[in-house]
Length: 306
Image (cartoon, rainbow, N blue to C red):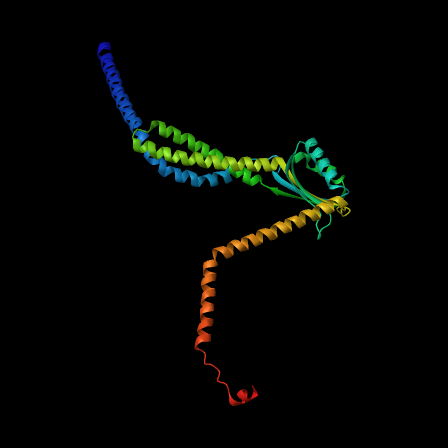
């Protein structure tokens, strides 16, 4: 009785084990076929899915909660000074720039003119953002401050947007690289390669814009306008210099006049045939007029008077 009851249990266990092995074998074969066709399906659908991914980049950037510890400001300052000597002030500004670890962007010096007899200069410099106020205080000590203003632009939202777009594009680049590695046909490889190149180009552009904004936030720009307090008059040149200048001007005028006469002679020589033809025509016309004109008859009164 014990043997009879144990035999069915053993057969049942054997049947269940056999069925489990068949199911596992069929699942493994289906998974293997799915994995073989996955690269082609993924490669064919990569191009169609990229547009949806790129369109959702801006939405992801808005949803991503990125906290900023402090506002990201681009600061620009402008200050105008009246100084005693523009040249000495320019040298002092160069020392301040080196002291504050800044850079000189541009320098424009304008000599006195008739409409503006004062010596002026414009200097553009770039200073680290945390040293903007100390630099302005040092510049104000160089002369009399005529005007001073500071403007700031918050670019924190733009930085967050660029950073989020860059992160999403980098993820897209990684996914495309995986799809390209698994792609089988040449057509799929070329399609994914073209899309990967476009994504990388967009990444480079956004990365450059992001670095530019960060650089503008890290460094502030100062425009310094300098103007001399007293109008500078050029000294009268010496007598010898005046004589030399007059001699140079006169000799230059004489040489210019001589060259002008020489040019006129050359023109006359070149056009001399036409001048000769024109003179011959005038001479012939006068001769013809004298020959064919009616002679004046002498009247009796004129004969008697003679």
